Image (cartoon, rainbow, N blue to C red; front, side, top):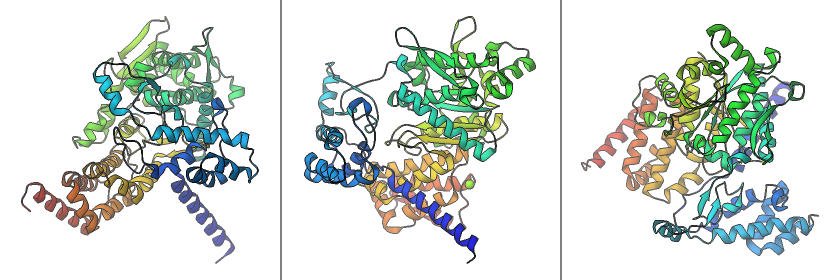
Amino acid sequence: MSEIDSKQRDEKVFELYEQLLEIEQRLIPTGLHLFGRPSSAGEQIDLFKMIASFDRPEHGIRALPQELVEDAVREFLEHGSDAATRLLEGQGLKPESTRPVFALLESVSAKLQTNTEIDALIRAIRGEFIEPGPGADIIQNPDVLPTGRNTHAINPYSVPSAVAFARGEVVATSLLERYRNEHGRFPEAMALVLWGLDNIKTQGEGVAQALWLLGVQPVRDALNRSTSVAAIPLAELGRPRIDVVMTVSGIFRDLFSPTVQLLDKAVRLVAQLDEPLEQNYVRKHVHEQIAQERCELDDAAVRVFSNAPGNYGTNVNFMVMDSSWEREETLGDLFVTRKCFAYGRDSRGRAIDGREARVAMDRALSRVEATYQNIDTFEIGLTDVDHYFEYLGGVSKAVEKRARARPAIYLSDSLSREVKIRTLEESVRLETRTKTLNPKWYEGMLKHGFRGVAEIENHVSNTFGWSATADAVDDWIYAEVANTFLFDETMLERLRELNPHSAHALVQRLLEANGRGYWDADSTALEKLRDISRSLEDQLEGVA
Ligand code: BEZ
Ligand code: MG
């Protein structure tokens, strides 16, 4: 082997090692929550490790060092706080600095073992008082426990928080760097998906990312409310201002009305800055449009879109699940039909409250070169629900037709200490390896019997949603789903016993993936799938 070959080999091995490590370090849900039941102690070690891995300045808590956290949490679970504190003291960590971490873990542990959900439900039905509690991810904010409380949201005027704004900068910078590494320049325009619950959980990280891409910062008024924005000078920003199209969920529109105004204000401010066009893509695009279409600033600066007032969702998920489309572009068109309602204020200060603006949205999307969404929780990822592909997939498909090119599609998660930007394809692979094809995950699901099989089928259908909207699923993923769940006779028997309906739906989805050109399966595999499908149909019809 030549010198170069062995160097390349080492790099390849290192890359593989990093990918394995990434998979290993993901927190993998190993079952569903049962309403009214406390969570079992079995999987708490992973959860506690994650909780102990975050700095929590608001509670005077420093994260435990990565290399010690596993041993310390094990000691804590087996012998308690004092023993764990001593163990770390032996490693040179002062008890004053580690005790607060274990106090937090003790409180989380106690709260996980109580469950008043059923009581609370009964009180709610009687119209009685339910104690309020914050809505968040358990790792980001352990104060969400105990469950069974009345989840309260957030003061929209407090968004984005200082922490969220600081994290937003890191994410925006990494996102633009990743695009630049792959394309040799910055994207002139991006489309972002903003959800309500996510921005509650992260205190507005998604909002902060949008502001950073535009190059502005929130300005608080005398009542400490974020009601205005100021431009960050170009010299400080060190890069152009990116044009941002924001597609916000109906929930976001309802919960974050002042934030919708803030985002719209930010775009209008940036469009009117006296700056070179190659350093300010918002201004560049608005100028071009005004010149070409002889329109007003108010027509050219619309960037915040949501559903019509009182409406929610894109329906792209329903269309995909029902197999009721012929060409993929229909999915993108449906996204625009549902989401082309503009929100904000015009230049005379009059409210634009969900005015239909299809032409403006088509125009804004026609410039987009990259799309992006932030994932905010360990509990729900790309293939757990159909909402990620209906939104991020839907907007990406809409861009593909209007910009006449598929955008680069990125995700990141606010889950780890370091920010990691992934392409959609990378994210789908990671999600598939850690969940759908991971025995730890699917055996956890299968413990739930009928519902567990339905979850497996859901994950495969949601994965299929990423083929339909973004062509982002490798062939091997479908092949391995077939191998794992259908071509393994013991597994097929289990699925058939537990839930033949979902097993049948799973086979049909794989056949559809092949039929639509998303999976280049060999003829033997297809023949086997058709046989399995027929035999499941016989079973369902009571023939077999
Ligand atoms: C939201 O929080 O905005 C949201 C939740 C579920 C699906 C779509 C959006
Ligand atoms: Mg393909």
